[in-house]
Image 1 (cartoon, helix red, strand yellow):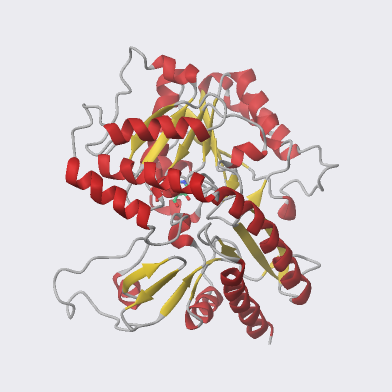
Image 2 (tube, protein in one colour):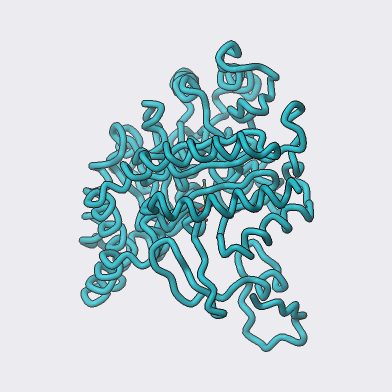
Amino acid sequence: MNQITPTLRNEPEGVSINAWSSIKDTFGSPKVTRAEGVYFHDDTGKRWLDFTAQLFNVNLGHQDRRIIEAIKAQAEKLCFISPFYRNEPREELARLLATVTPGDLNTFFFMNSGTEANEAALTFARMVTGRPKVMSRYRSYHGTGLTTLGVSGDPRRGASANNFASSVKFPNPYCYRCTFKQTYPSCGVVCATSIEEQILAEGPDTIAAMIFEPITGGNGPIIAPQEYYGILRRLCDKYGILMIADEVINGFGRTGKWFAMQHYDVVPDMMTVSKGINGGVLPLGAVMMSDAIAQKFSDRSVAIGSTQTGNPLSCAAGVAAISAMIEDRVVDNAATLGVYLMRRLKELEAKHRLVGEVRGLGLLATLELVKDRATREPLVQWNAPDPLVGRIKALFNERGVQIHVRSNQIVISPPLTITEAQLEEGLKAVDEVLTILEA
Ligand SMILES: Cc1ncc(COP(=O)(O)O)c(C=O)c1O
């Protein structure tokens, strides 16, 4: 690994900075040269197991031939056309999406990322309701725009937290660390019912939307109790608030169903997606809207857009990726292997005292690390810098395993095409790292 720690002065000109990184971090990161399936290779010849599908997006693994061929074929025909024209890959993708989305989420507005999809959904919610505020959860990430970072609860919101004054946060359905110090099911799902008090205090007529990740992703999988989203749906209906499910991580099979809201049998008014929509290979995001929302735009312009809205190459990749997912029964694989993964993680939980709890759904899982199982004191405080996190990451790096370490969470989210044997490779590294940490 390149250990240069450059200053701007002694570096050659033309430095490009990694996302969420400093220049120093950038030069400390591996330079990746090629990838296939669940592995990628860096320029030192080292092979890495991709135990996070990069950023939860390369759901079909790296370099799926069907996606590559679809992009090539589309590039020969039409690389780009203005978003004021229709194009065939965009329309085909919409038709295909409508076959897998829940309820009446049949109308799509394409953007280039999860951030843009959420920014668009929040704009639509405000246009449709004429209300300003947005309710969201403390442990959440919705994107890197001023509005989306503002509604995010994630520590990364630091830079713009105060730029979106109309954000109202509510607690997470986080049973292991219940805000209300209750236990499910005797709690009556108070984390959901108590939101009504907040709605009334804010004034229902001021709230446009409620946005949440059905299964919280980047902030450590948090899995809401079964009744939770039904309660939120009733509150939204009662007060005319639009429900937006951010399925940017959850969508396209990650949790063992096409969309995580299908675990709860609740249909939101809008769903936002990106990442896995085209196997994670080209920029693409979408707002999926119900017939009732779509109706509002039958004569009225959506009033926003991007030069690359519905880019033919990104959409052609989307058609190929979703077709491949259907053909290979990728969602079923995620569900089946998810059960296997949880069984194995439970074994690691039993073996390692540092593991307070393991949680997961499909191929999105976490080991939550604690100092003490009885008190549940986190091994590393949430949202506080701690060198131990760097040490844990380094131990995985030494083993050639790309994994998501976030405060006291070790998050696993491999490509959905992974095999049991490949899962075992990553779990072996988890076992070894925990053993070292405990020693
Ligand atoms: C749940 C969720 N929403 C939105 C986003 C933003 O997506 P993007 O990075 O494509 O802008 C992310 C990114 O990680 C995410 O995890």
